[in-house]
Amino acid sequence: MGVEGFAQQFYQQEVTDSIFARIQGKSFKENCTTLREDLRYLRVLHYNKEGEVLEGELICHKAIAEDLLEIFQELYQAKYPIERMVLIDEYAADDEASMCANNTSAFNFRTISGGRRLSSHSTGMAIDINPLYNPLVRWRDGQTRVFPADAAPYVDRSRDFPYKIVRGDLCHQLFKKHGFSWGGDWKNSKDYQHFEKR
Image 1 (tube, one colour):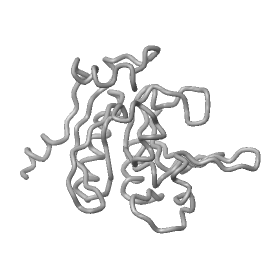
Image 2 (cartoon, one colour):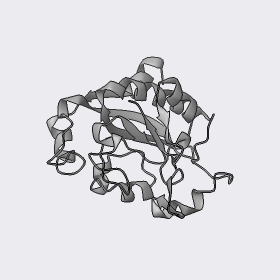
Image 3 (cartoon, rainbow, N blue to C red):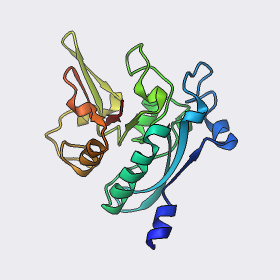
Image 4 (cartoon, one colour):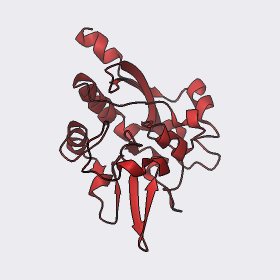
């Protein structure tokens, strides 16, 4: 694939009527305060750990669309593995179901996992990469809660397993270079899948 043909596989567009029909009432809920015109639909290529090339799609805020396209191009060129990337609406915008499927996603108008305030995913300014293997871990009142619940085996970050994001790996480096913060750096919880931009 030539340089021009390669670039054509990574693109963004406005949320068309046909795309909006897929997300309306799911990730774009009736009470959504994020404007449709501020969102962008992205198509990218990515590898899985078996070395297969897959087509990925996601919706994000227009402010980070170009960042994500550049990041995913570099990840693709390095054959960095991402297992699945389909719209979270394929899981009825159910974050737990999407995470359990190890689905990489961005926009979803919802509250934070296990909380009441709106998540940064609600504006499309955050993305979760390979979430099953990079869980959100929260410690409260002497108890540990893991999201998704199926990700308990991957809380131990000293273990070696596929799709793991660690500080200093290519995924981490690229998001940091583009000005994103990483949930793996949080103090009171750890969200290893999560990158966001303010």
